[in-house]
Picture 1 (tube, rainbow over the protein chains, first blue to last red):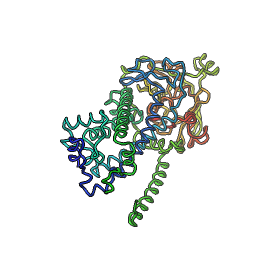
Picture 2 (cartoon, one colour):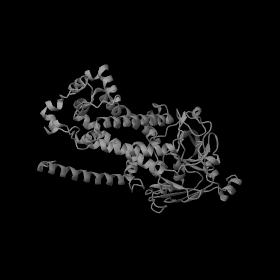
Picture 3 (cartoon, rainbow over the protein chains, first blue to last red):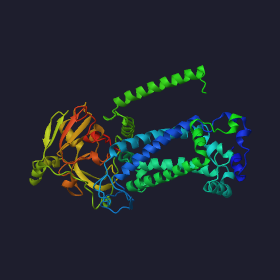
Picture 4 (cartoon, chains in turn green, cyan):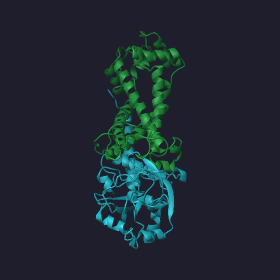
Length: 261
Length: 252
């Protein structure tokens, strides 16, 4: 399936898809029920983590490298935003209200739900061979020409071909694998490294990242990468047809003629 | 639409029943082994309980990271201090000679200690990081008497579960469980970086709980109460911070 999907990338107007060839494909949904449920639970958690994370950053919008850092030490950089603490020199003449109580509680609760959901997704993805079937790119997917075509096409606002409604191209596969197996583990690791109690049991979790403040800075940059992914993800969905793609992730149906054939 | 066969219905019925009873058993076990924090209610109770339970299981005896002397931060940030009360200023003028730490509650011999009394016990020190929930942190050498030593002197009753500690600052108190109270790095801290503990850092006496964030490390400690329940203290969630929406357990 992977090779079929990618082969069609070369012919941009190719309509013949793997969907119409295989009778099994007509019955199986675009995304399995487990993928759909874990996707939306993760989405909710991601927004909860993002909003609460921003609130927590506002209480100290300065970032450092190494083990320590306070308002008395030189930061690596400081975000040009007001703060919810009087002790932080921001240049703004006002202090925002403290929101850290509920923000921390929501952040950690959402993190728990996200991690458990992610574990369920990864374990079932390995058992059902979801990763190997749907996300690991084939050799053909990885050719420079295929990848660059996949990159340039959306930049020219060219909608994906019908064939791409049932599968991912090589670039998408690499991106999803990177998000699932690099960015998410890294954001969880750098977050846990900031836990004093966790670090007492697993001190290497902090030292490997270069210290507590480095872990915090890494946590921030990985979050930026995840937000960038989110923007591109939504942009690609809009380009491909927002309702069609969103329906596929909610009901599993793509709404393609093949599905009703 | 979704078709439910009889087999599927029976299987999912059994799975649901097994899941529900599994949760009930887990809740009973968690309660029995002290894995449920006092602020387990409300919408964030699930997260608080998962964090507290897992960290208690993982870190009951683990030691906070310690650092070499050359890692001590040259300028430790004392954070904001509420205006000092008249009572405090009076004690400060007397060199804190009249400062008292009273210990009561579920102990065999309630007692009161001066700073000199506390210093008469073998002093201990560790070079650890104080990390604020806001994100900043510094490393300092903390000198004091392990809380466990003071608890040993007064004799803790076996049913004790928490130690409540009260500050001289108005409306400032917190509590920790016995795992943290008896932890070797939990200090009643009277010294810092080779000298006295500065007032800005909570001198003459500060609770130092290095495996929890800054706000559990309350300054100006005057009273300890050993208890088996936090119900009678404030609104029952174990700390003033909880009443402002902050978690009672702050190992993260």
